[in-house]
Length: 330
Image 1 (spheres, helix red, strand yellow):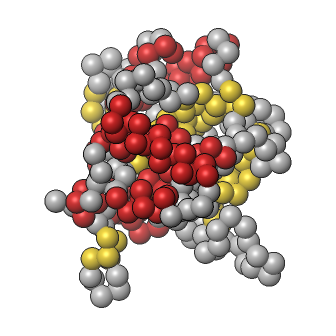
Image 2: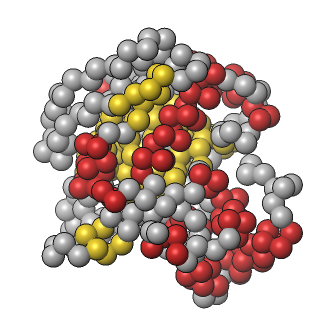
């Protein structure tokens, strides 16, 4: 049994976290396994572009999954970048799905912050989002979205409790087991950045908030015919600082091109990142894989003086004893 399982509170006590989690702040018709070349990017930080293992879904979409090399890079570097994770045809189908949902008025202006403090701040973030997921039946059926869910489920299964992601110290001693991920707490949304949109530097998992349950962040890009002048790069920071670089601090970062089909996964608590200004419309799938809440998580929240966090605990108690059937993530 993984350490992350031993102190988990009941499932319904964990579910309340998913209601308040908010970003502080991701081949088509052939049965053949797509081949991906081992081309290197022009940066010392990125070692290789990794091939993918695949299976065929009943809808005839190819469902990729992470291989051992991808897992190793995620463990060693804190992130992995996989170009061509989705075929151009599937990217196009998902992009049409985005536009269809948006035309129905389901997208909302994106906010920032944690829990009840979530608020609009256009100096930090200019974008609009719509939550998606298997439970969002009101969005209608989509074979492309179903293939996306299947693929991301396979990724979660490959990451959950994977011993290759255990934290080991320099002496080879185990510091922390890889977290067991709770499929009921997955977060997934479509994000659309207009011309001039951006999201300034931030982290996805913040101590003292429900977002601490986030273990891995994912971004999957849907930008067809993207060019360098379009902007909107993902910038991942590795300078050791949190949300800001202090005066005199030396920056260390990697920029990732938001080309259609590219998948990025990184450790939510370790990689500050931002969306650079985009000069054309930029569309992405954004998500987080979460672990179950533990008693120490509850205690950490209850130790805060912040009234909003105490309000979260009250909601948790209601969910534990009253059920969650009528509560939906909006």
